[in-house]
Every structure is written in C-alpha cells, then in structure tokens.
Length: 460
Image 1 (tube, one colour):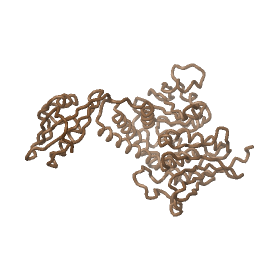
Image 2 (cartoon, helix red, strand yellow):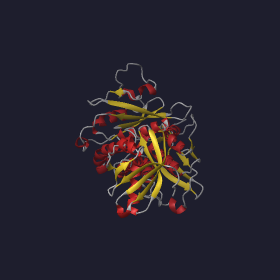
Image 3 (cartoon, rainbow, N blue to C red):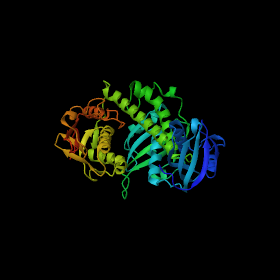
Image 4 (tube, one colour):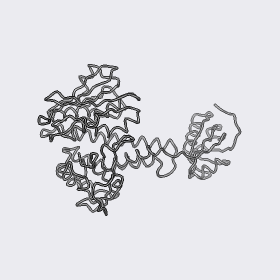
C-alpha cells in the first residue's frame, strides 16, 4: 500500500465509526455531505474504508471519491485502527477536485425513454406516417380507448388522442407532437404523449413508439380488476388480475431508481448509483416476467385465436429492426433489415408477427458478439412466406435445438434475465397463425431462426 505524499489532513473516528475530529479540507467535505462534528462519517466510501480497517484490525489505504456540489473529489486515504478497536486514525493525501462531467445527451435521452416506458399506461406502435399498427394497455380506465384504437388500425393516432389547443391539419411533424397534452375520452386526468422514433442517423423515422403518460395516479387498483377482457387478449389470473395491480407500483420503483441512478435529484456517490441501477434492473426483470407470464396464459388458453390479415413481412421486419436498432448499436452490431421496397405478402396478424420478430432479433442481439452482424431476410416458396433472423453468435448444438422451444428452457444460461418463455410463446403464436417457428444452427457458426406463415394467395 502507498504511504508516500504529504499528509494534507488528519482525522479521528471512534468505535461507532463517528468522525470525532478532522482538519480541512476533510472537515468541510464531511459537513457539506450532511454530517456533523462529532457525528457519523458522511462520506460513504470513507465510511466503508474506516469500518473495514476497524473490523479487520489493520491499516487500509485506497483512493476515495465523493461528490462535492458540482465537483468530484478524489483523495488517497489511509485508515489505521487504534489499539483495542477504539476507532481509527485517518490521514488524507493527494486531494484533488474536478468538475463533474456532463452526461452524454444520447445516454441521458435513452434513460429518459426507458423511464417513460415503465410509466406509460398505454403503448402503441405507429408507422412512419404516425398511423396505428398495434396497441396495448393494462389500464381499466383506458380499455375503451385501446379497443377503439385497435379497431382503427391504419388511422392516425391523433384521431383518438387529439392534442389540446392544436387546430392544425394532422399529422404535424412528430417533434411538434412529442410531449404534447392530449384529450383522453372518459378520463378527467391530464395526459401527455411521448413519441419515440425508430430511426437510423441520417434517415427519417421508420416508425414510432407512442407512450401515453399522466402525472396523476390512476384510479385504485381494485377498479382495474375483473373488468372486460383487455384489448391485448390478456386473460387469467396473471394477465387480467395480477399484472394490472403489480405493473404500476413496479414501474414507479423503476422510475424512482432511475431518478436516483442518473442523479437527477442531486449528487450521489457512485456506489449508491450502482445500488439504484441494480434496483432498476431487478424491477425491469419483474415487468418482463409479468409480460411473459401474461402472454403464456394467452397462448395456452383454449379459445386463443389470432386475427389474420393481409400484411407485408418486409414492412413488419423493418419495423422490428427499427425498434431494436439502438440496442444493436450499443453492442456495435450491424442490424441488416430488408431494403425499402422489398416486400413479401402474407396472411398473418401484424402485431403477433412483430412480437415474434422482436423476440428473435432481441435474442440475437443479446447472444451475438460485439461487432458482429444480424441479418433479417425474406423468402417465399409459393404457399409459405418466411422471415429468417440469422446471427453470428455461438450457435446451438443439435441437442439444444431439440429443447430450445420448450417452456422455461434457458439452455443452462444464468444471470441473463431471461424467463425461458420467449421462444415457447413465439412458436405457439406462429402455429396459431397457421405457420411455424424453426431453427437451423451449428456450434460456432451462428443460428438461423425461421418464422413461417401462409403466403397471401391474392398478392400479385
């Protein structure tokens, strides 16, 4: 351990890790962090170092960092326990302070979007012209609105959520509508919309994710239980009763944890920001599990049916790629989607195909190495239409391929946050649409997941 350098300040702690005395600049930092003299050590990393030195009974030394207003202070600190465990002598060396770096605007915006997704009471997918593609909600208050929007797929979202005090012809440019207040029929609460574009730098958005949010809490959970079937076809104990009750409080936990983690409420030591990040991640895992269990109830119900329609698999593939493109770029993965104008007519339910492709592409991103490529290709053979998602990941052995679509199967993976339900649900959806979901792979040579649905016989 280091012992060189001029001692800039000294301090003493007692057996309860209270700071009894301290020289400047340690005393000033302790007081600005909310401490008192004498009083418990208020600098978290210093407290941890002193506590360990006292418990272990030998000298410890390391660099300690703390937030001091708009600056970050770093110092080399030695904590040496006194005889009998009566506290520690503290020596400060090499004190430095620097302005707190400003957060990257892209990362900040991504975290804000993630927080808004957690709090959204209704979510819709829109095409490039802001026309509705799919709608989901867990809110009993918004069920009629969601049902009307689902019946109006292909229409502008503003037909159902008119912006307040806007009389211009719709649709306005999405940037003018993002964050605007909207009128929600049959609700007295104020709402606003967020429009999250799916886009690549230099191109216009390929579509949007619409989030409906309110600063006023929703009606009591009891009012959201036991009503009519949700537009998303989520029924049963989890989908209709537990998910609506649990979703909002979990979302609030995630949002508050993100506020702490991003230091929007004020300076915070890195260790505490890390704790908040773990809380947020655990909350997101719970929400994902609720979604998977809700979908599992749907696909396993006896009366489950899809709503087949004439769709273009090329358009659905580009939508899915646009939604996940940011996640792919975070790992420097090139996501290669069908070119604009490349079409493949099929008979299937748009939002269910989108759900399957989001699962397949998301898995490919999760398990592919950084700097690799993922291809989304279209193939047709007359009676069938196929979307192939191919990656450069580790591949799947023949023995694993026999199990990869089983319920709760994770192929031995731990700690990746998956529930082992995504591929099981995706195959059930594919088969409910009259198609199938299969895999081709070799260890070390990536994997090809193939979604097959009926081709459109009336297409030219």
